[in-house]
Image (cartoon, rainbow over all chains, first blue to last red; front, top):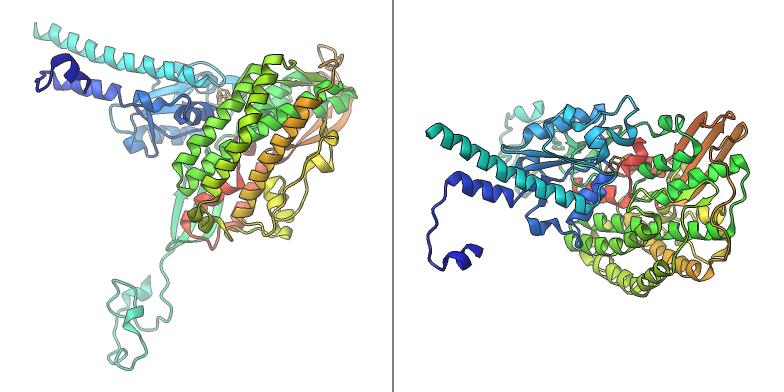
Length: 168
Length: 401
Ligand code: SF4
């Protein structure tokens, strides 16, 4: 393990359990295999394919919302689909994050002027990272995930800082 | 269910030898009176719209008797985003943008159909070089699209490794498409009157490099998935669509050809540079899932053959006809169809003389294939349902439009 190389073998590390969990969460963001439209081919299929291989970042797909940490909303959400998106989000266990992939999930995209289309998935569920593009390249999705990891790290630090302030 | 609760027992029934105890279903201790045939309660199972194997947002409502499907109902509309209606509020040049997002797996074909419909209205003569480039890109796109089908069909049958190999080859094709068109999926390459860009020598050599490896890869793929005995047992003789049913459902593409009807738009209503190319149309015999598989594999090989001819045969000349910036075709109607990766993709345009179509109709081949699914599912096991969805190769983007 990498830690061994830094601290030597048989070493003992003291860490706040919270920090340990956040570290683990950050590096194993399992997303829900839930492709809606065109973006799914890029964001879910190419991403798990051999060239982009999101697996090396610990990003891997799960078929059930109950095992997933991240929901990538990859595609146009219309009013018929909105209810399902919300229900899937509610089925995911805490802590959970949402990535709005592509123009459609962010704002409605090229179909914005059609009344059946939801103008951005943030009207339904809270979104953590928006990835622009139509469709975004898999590299952009990867960058989006790095941003999400940074965000989780920051959240932990902010939480700790708040606690320190309170304890003082 | 009520008969099962009537557990009054006729003494001596077993002793008379009318029942073989070995035949009793596990867990049933006594045979209820008056029940000759033990039926189980039907169970309604909802598959989708979030399901890893429904290829998007398809929803199936299956009525099951044990493991056997009694009735299947297909629910669509989870991706309806008004492509047809929006098309009536877009200029003719902009139709390609919408068509790309319809059948997103094979964008070139959609664009080509829209462009051809507009050209028919305008009576534009497309330069020969543009026709050849359209053909070349169509065939590259066809392999890329079939690769996705191939990978996911493997996944649906339980073969994960296959998907990884298929995606590797798809990336090689997408690289070529990206180098020529500038985008990985939404190409917007075929415009009314011609194509966007010419092939550069580098792209040509990239295609030639790809052509050197693809034959071997296709053989490998076929050996790995099609040569697998488990897969053959799972697909042979399952989901059979006979000729009459296939024609009655309006199927086109590999699903129709799998049933033994050799209809191919490229050969029977030739467009672009197809009349000048030599190719065969693979046709199946019985119309089961295995035939659809072999037809698609054969199509990939034929596509490779056509790419070879295209890359050597592209004539010199312009890539774009003289067309005005804003197209205002005369009032009238036109219908153009192409052989997309999934079948006959048609575009029907009605023009009223303005710069936007009066009516824009998109004939999605997958919609017809999907309807045939309701016919082939009943009577099959539940596990076959997933495989059969994979075998008809649908794209929900074009079904819901
Ligand atoms: S952003 Fe573009 S590629 Fe993504 S789902 Fe919308 S239309 Fe399709």
